[in-house]
Image 1: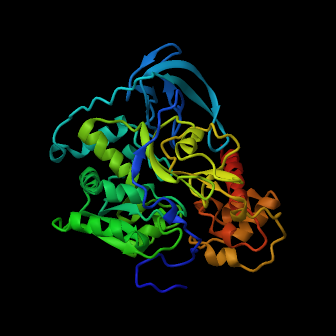
Image 2 (image 1 turned 90 degrees about the horizontal axis):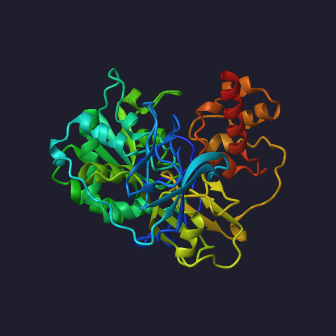
Amino acid sequence: MRKTGYKTFRRGGIHPPYHKELSSGKAITRAPVPSRLMVPLRQHIGAPNKPLVSPGDRVTVGQKIGDADAFVSAPVHSPVAGRVEVIEDVKSFSGETVTSIIIAADAEQPPFEEQKIKPLDELSAEEIREIAGEAGLVGMGGAAFPTRVKLSPPEDKPIESVIINGCECEPFLTCDHRLMIERTDELVQALGLMIRAVGADGGVIGVESNKMDAALKLRAAVSDQPNLDVEVLEVKYPEGAEKQLIFAITGREVPPGKLPSEVGCLVQNVGTAIALYEAASAGKPLYERVVTVTGPGVKEPGNLIAKVGTPISTLIEACGGFLGETAKVIIGGPMTGWAQEDLDAPVVKGTSGVVALTPELIDVREEEACVRCAKCVEACPMYLMPNSIVEAVQHGDWEKAELWGALDCFECGCCTFTCPAYIPHVEYVRKAKAEIATLKG
């Protein structure tokens, strides 16, 4: 185990090649607006939305076009001014089919008309939660859990500390790093809003030590606020996973099957925090986000502000197109992302990156029999036995798969990364989760 002097989580984890240098120095720029956007009605955990528009309708930037009555949900908004062409099922980045609103964008795009609500320091906790809900905010690190729900913890689970996850521990991705550098003050103000929303005592921004430029800027920004702090953490994957981050910063361990509120913590992503600031200060819904487009297969890696619904092919073209032979394109990071067959898959609220990998970075060897080396067990940060979960799935024993902790796995991929037999543990876990959910109805 590496000893760095920085805090980290207790057990497991890996040190993959990070390749952050490809885009970490690239300032955020705006991607071109495509002529046609595909906006999925479900981009979040929870109840799917119903369309609020019909084919032929005109839409404006930021207009709400999909919503649901359920509390655990998040509305969607038009990313452009244009006309609704059709509402149809479209294949998402994960391969599932999602009902989507197809919008033909106008040639001229007016800016979003800002709406001043009231000074930030006058917003009440309830108003902050309502703003997050109306703006359609979700966790932008990939989980896509509705922010309004997260800012509404159970009354019997008081929040003591709000933690901003600035680790960005996935290889290649740098969008959060750039946001911390370029929008430092807004991030600090957003942390203050979250603290007020949940009635916490204070907040901490956790940053891995390979982003010291961001950590130093943030420390300067919070130096006069005694209830805020910046904690520099060890570079180790998955440092930014919610439960691992909480332990690294507070020493508190979230029990299996429980939420961070069980130990008085709430964790939010950098991008989500910035989106909350935009919603609270200007009434801006979440219809665009920063996406890292990178990898050795991209000519000019960068960090782009992309409209939700933009085909990932548009972002690749904006970065100069492919460089040489590209073996795989991933939405998200290489550890937890999704390989793409169709480059027309749209950007959604949780799309943090588009990574183009060349053949030398892809190991295509066939899965072999488990050699019982226990490397997957040693690497698992959740104290699970991935080998036993895989064995249960191979035998169709879903009860045993659950007993071995399949539902506690957050699919970080450490097990797959370390396996000498090339066993795709995460794929087995996803199958187990789906079968267990079906059995439970």
